Image 1 (cartoon, rainbow, N blue to C red):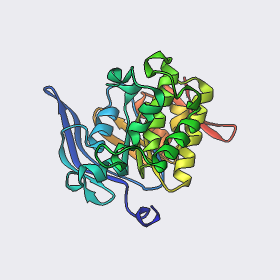
Image 2: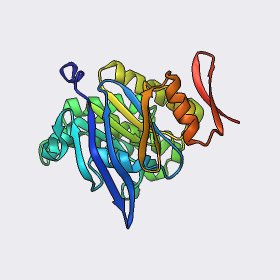
Image 3: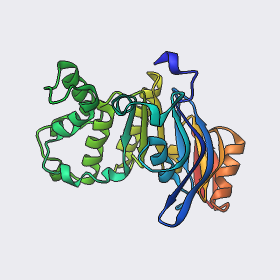
Image 4: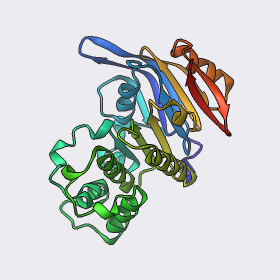
Length: 261
């Protein structure tokens, strides 16, 4: 992974996207650093989740997305699935998995590494156990996903994303349904991944958590209005502006937080 750290993990060049008859992304240019945690923030309707889906190759768009320097649409699907792991918003589209055991849901994250119809390898089983233990979901491994609470389910789906052991993880509202202690656990997981040389990109509504990232992408009305370090005063000013100056960024107990006015 270290050989990629001087190459942006993701680049967008003039990326635009339309949902229905409405253009929701407008000519976005963006380069996201490797081995960093970047959070995407902005008011409702800013286009955050749409941008993340376009970057993941899950949404039709105009313009070009590059994955570690390569045009994303030129990277074979299997290789792309090994390099990039996706956690959708609140497990969207996971209803059909309700009857699967938690262990089997997490094992789905290993499919990009397995030959067609091959049994899981010892490496697969070890990766799944590490992922479930890291999200404190190992004890539920023999329970159906549909029997879990929203927060428990989210931790299992996070484990599935972690089990891929991808270089790049894209997560859309990963803190949904998680209580504060498990939100803190997620932040520690993000930090640990970056320490290993991996790249994390998250869409977050929780601004104090977003400000704990390395970099912030601030969006408004389908455009990136600022991209900078989370400790940069210009980043704080842009964040306050897109929320109509109804919040203020403060330094409290050695961390940045956003408080309503």
